[in-house]
Image 1 (cartoon, rainbow, N blue to C red):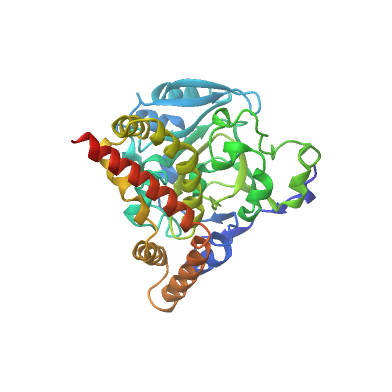
Image 2: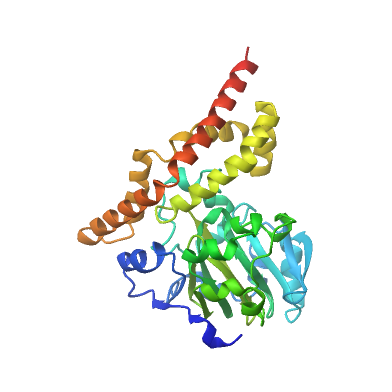
Length: 388
């Protein structure tokens, strides 16, 4: 494998990037990129320099249980511990490969850390019915993570959960990325089972093929199909954001000790992709469970696994058939277009988002609504009969 077999990961200056250009060049074409000069005035840029800041922070729930990776990339072992113990391990042994990866800081009761940064205008422009929807991943709570690790740690090739998009800001250190165009998702994930939907490898189908290891020196020999994909390679510096759009297959490794922040999100740029994954989840997981269990037992089991109340879950599932209604689509588009300046640019963004989302939803909406309607019917009938 040589550097010439990769394309350079596009780099764009966040101080001059216009929202319309971001949509047209990156978000809608599913093009990964590095965006520089974001967060220059965030307190996190000065404070998030080591694990010790988080260990000393009064707003961090240090008893929250997390899974970490111990050991160098490719030979790491999973370690179950707490946030506090993980931070102490990293602080005491900074040269030892240890990775506190995917620390769900909001779900884990450390949401006060959000005071140290602001979400850039390009991302997370979505109404509550998208960002809080449990079937779409409940991104406002369950898709916000911190990654703190030493040099040599890594995240293997994966697709982000629920086919959502993500922005990752590097507070300190340097990361190397290999990202594929989101348009090459089908090519790269064919035959990989549930790994193609953003699940951890241990949860993937045992009889499926692994995703290509993008950092394997023999990548193109072992996975010949990768020669047909658009693979981009680049280095993320402190203060940069790496944008991974929906369907983007990617891998990353820490060239230095790193502290980074990731938010995944659902908005008008990726709603059709996320709805496609939700349809798969409904058909393959949620509906089979609902058919086998009594409605109350089903809701009890699912509410525990999702961390929400049964009443909230029940209402969300009953409302699911109307999620992609014309009214909701218009609200999602208007919210996303709000990233542009008022006037001509905003109207151009609105028109662009509306046309592209309508086109993509035409292929997804019927199957989603059919599965959602069956779920609603089964729940409504079961809950009604249980009251008699």
